[in-house]
Image 1: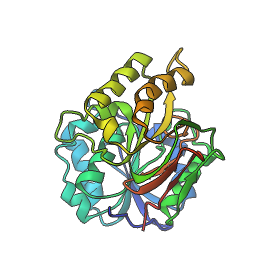
Image 2 (image 1 turned 30 degrees about the horizontal axis):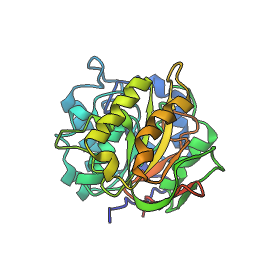
Image 3 (image 1 turned 90 degrees about the horizontal axis):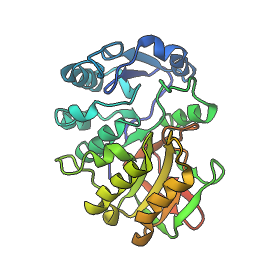
Image 4 (image 1 turned 60 degrees about the vertical axis):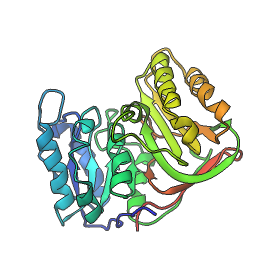
Length: 302
């Protein structure tokens, strides 16, 4: 059983960090108003407004910014404010015992997938795959905003066709711990000490800007590394900005790899680089019912 971080209360402080690509403070702009709406205070990390080429500061700066937020007794949650690239450069330097000793909410997605999978594994802590404050499309939509409410109270999330049309790729039902996130970042762990563990787990997959050939290649890498056959089931999230490639073509590619495995699989979840972006805790148990087309996610906070 993984550690669930303590829930937030009105008046709590969250730490904002950029562990991947750089971001200007003004790019957050009125998105910080969401924290005010939630009744939260915030501390801005040194990585906000920090530039080292395509990274939000040096590896040492980003690592220390993260560690400082984890150590800070006033900070009750750490929000990643931008994706991009960079967390994999520091993943072997993060103090996982420090995180386990100071379990806090860690929230974000995209490049944050690398952080989520390792904190789930090495710190035994539940984390959250959820929308960032720096959404490039502007202010978050109302449903995405509501996702933050799960940080204030333990609540089950049931995701069915009341949120978006869902499609059964492989029938059946399964219960297991949820892991995963961005397909590209999951594949990048293969062959390393930090290779994602999917054994008997329900795996979430999403991505953006990838061609069909790239998606095919990454799915094949998961097949060759036996990750697909070791998983218990699959949740297919949003695959965005694919140019001329449509949803049907993407699902044909992904389904070609998953159907022969006979693992319960549902596609169509609005999770990833999309609006709305539904947040789910990672490291908790989920019940995935591909026959009735829903997933029930257990609470992520205490």
